[in-house]
Image (tube, rainbow, N blue to C red):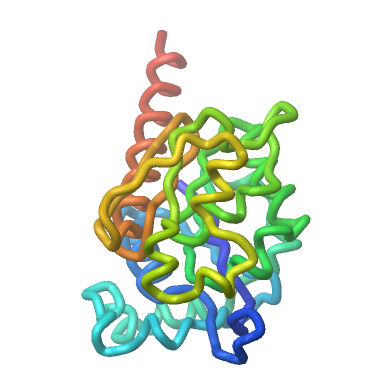
Length: 236
């Protein structure tokens, strides 16, 4: 099984001058969920190399077991430091794609033509697409059969009230929850900061950093079910 993880390369929080990037938990936790399951992983980003880590995600109060493990794992650190160029990635050769969040993707992935084409290629070829926290925003220009990919789908992502709590409502280009609703997504959510992930067909979304493990587990479950179904039909 092969999964592509796509990270942001953007490190400036709008016009604030503050740093951003990907949220460390959202990269580390899924990485280990996948690696522990024996998945072959490829990491990519628009600029390649080391994607920027949001410094807030590494504050003492935000530490998680996956982050602690990451800091003690040379192989993980090497993989993150050497991401491939997004423009060189193709859906062929992979079983699914997973987008970690953080605020960074709101600037360099949401309108990125390479990312849009890649997601459409995965989805059109019957492969799952997963995104967590702010990363569901990367779906906002992705189409399937001429309609927004999220239209009529149960989806989640970083909520308006979570954005209010981190006081970035007026900094981000748009609000993830509002945009997914505008596109016809059936937006679901739980109270702020609780773990919540949804699978609807081949689309998997997670609400916030706490949902990154669940989002990765949902993707593995879907891939396992798809593999089993394929084997069953081949044997019939």
